[in-house]
Length: 195
Image (cartoon, rainbow, N blue to C red):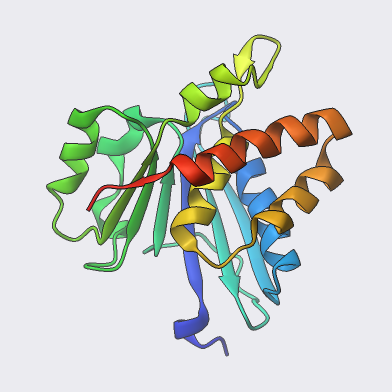
């Protein structure tokens, strides 16, 4: 049985086509490389079309994980598309414990999250701006998922950035891995803790 103290549950929230599931999978690989023994990634698709809300669930533990269900309440909620920030299930927040990482610099969206007294901390990153600045795109579409991973690693503070670099090297071509890592590294340093 997993010791709940050692289990970190993360919900990734975004839209179809943003690479939510890929972000969870890459983070899982980086966690393994950082010494986590247990990782579990579970995707959840709704309408399965581009632009539709998508969630992915990631569990990390220093013990083996045999749980493959969705996550009811999360330690972290990672929001790739800030238009979904108001649609976060309030019952998915652990009162006083859940931390939010959001790809947004929109003060209204962030202030709306701050009103929820149950949210422990909010971390903001302009992942879209970083990706645009570095020209991180595929077929004209800006890639933000790998950038946001850097912000999450900053907020979590237990996965090593070098482990993420290795995960990217295994997934992408050398040039693409370097560009994705540059974006994630920049996000790591530019992430701002709001409260």
